Image (cartoon, rainbow, N blue to C red; front, side):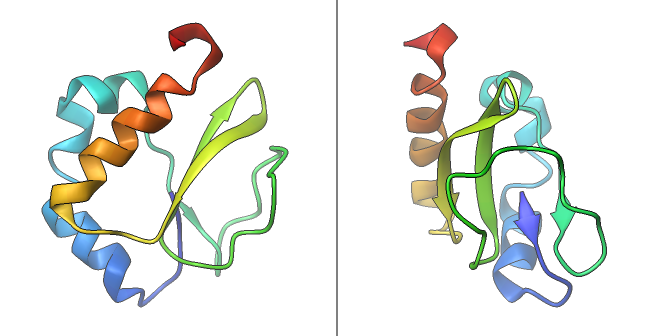
Length: 93
């Protein structure tokens, strides 16, 4: 999860999804690493394109981006989009 300090959509995700995510099957399959674009060094991964929107959820497999969710579409849509990302993993196709 790429985020920025003060991002209201990141905070909305933190409140609505954050506590449940690591407890869910998808959260265990796709463990979250938060990267603050204002504070953290960029991870050594090959992104398909730069991150310009926060939050952006990037699915990484073997050091390369295989999919992303740009922005937070709300709780009703997030889980479905995350499930779609999981299906994009080579080992889960």
